[in-house]
Image (cartoon, rainbow, N blue to C red; front, side, top):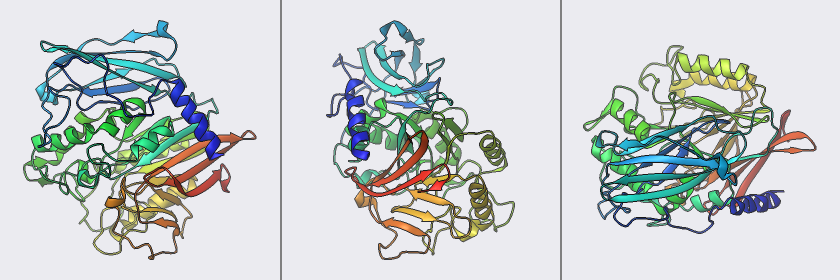
Length: 457
């Protein structure tokens, strides 16, 4: 089944005009700029909306010090349903400015559900003009039982890149799988624990995004796959961060603003998206509302906060999706390292809310996907039966913090190595089926688990 689905996906990729080989990120390029050195990203895709993000730069590639200076320009987006040029629409021109680090975001609304769109981003200034293109799919309507594939990854440290000068290897096999969407669970960059310079101020924090977004594999993937970006501690401030802290001259509030500036995001950091009749995902926020880690455990100590809890209960109760998946930046089941960890729901210092979370998920029959841990695993909570799948880090070099021999009772699968998760929702004889696959950095399946709407197969 996987091979036949892969062949169909690859054909779909080719039919959409999406290249399988590494290509220039732009076409018709004016050598004088402005350039799109950070590529483009398409985010927050629903059945009728999307956000296109880009950053205009004075050069196309970072220099040896990772500098990618911005260039003020006017930018607009043209977009249409693939193969239907008569549906083309055009946004207004918007300026890119130093205040926003020369980034700009275009909300696209009133889109048609369950179709592929193509788009062109155009930019011009006194130096010249340039354009770059991409493609994405909108979510099927919630009444449509459509097949869905998405991929999940975590932990992108620049100094552990496994394709030097190109990026993380996983972006090639992820793209070849032709997913409808992608979720990055956080630690997209590492402000406080990566190759120098450490991000102790706003300028250096932005530099971390510039050098990551400039990598060729990333510049090919992100313009062509709908993405949902989650934040975790390292992309906002420092390890195990909470509101009110600082890292050098970088404040928690500035870290929040930079994350929102450098990624296509909607108004709320937590959100839920319906992908057809059989799938709904809940994307959780784990930093903005949390209590300090050092606070004594108890009913008042929370990672999610009261408003997010209310939203979760209300939206889950309103959903009739066949599969309900909660995606967390950090573990809920674990197990996590027994010593020195006090930052997530699987740790003892968060036991009160952790128990509450696991009971809620069990009662609602929700599956959990997470990132943050530097090993791949599939665990089942002994008390509630909640199933959790961790994507593991993006590269083998980044893996560690656990021993391959250290199997715990919760573990159904353990692999201390890098890779990503792929998730497929399809109908078999009219019955919805969900297949989760842990994959290595080359995209090879190393573990597989299937579920029906009644439970595990």
